[in-house]
Picture 1 (cartoon, rainbow, N blue to C red):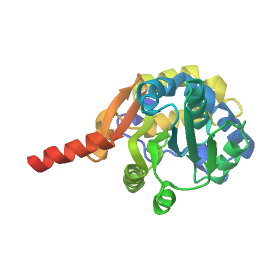
Picture 2 (cartoon, rainbow, N blue to C red):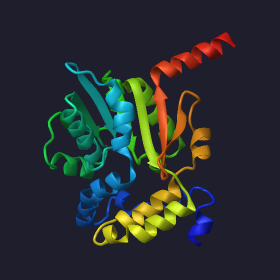
Picture 3 (cartoon, helix red, strand yellow):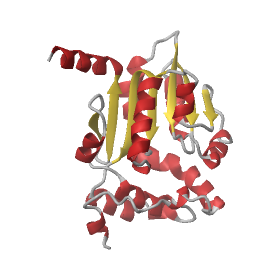
Length: 245
């Protein structure tokens, strides 16, 4: 099948190599090590921090943030560092159910305020934990419908103010540009091949909007990403409008 044909619909049969239990451990480590490059170039978290997370932080009060499916932990560390540079205290909990990701992240350079756990979001819900902000990066396309429903439900329970799920947006242009521009990062790692698979598995904005509850909205996050947003106050206002209707 050509890549053009495969992009007409989500390719749920495609599996990323790094998700396989028997994938090469050295290539996996190199993949985790190169995530910061990919995320800094493509994922837009610096802008998201300034526009959405920083306004919720207050000098003299420690904020809290949960990163679900943190992978190598690079986004969690970046957010904590940016907050520190701006004079804020932000406690970041980064979780991933995959022991290989947890091991890599916990051995990365230490950043004050960042802690790692090998856990599912549902475990934190059962523990009664809450955070000012809940985020994820590039996990939605990995999930089946039931898992997506569960993560969004957990996010609503865990977030006091804001939940942000950033994920790739499927398009022919994104596929071809990633194929042409990121192949060097694939040498010795799974970055290139799995990146293309991720694009094939990811949602268009319309598909994502139709797959999530009404309390969530899909916004554009640069040319290559969808940002799934839940704001507790907005959700409450929507509920009140629906009750009045």
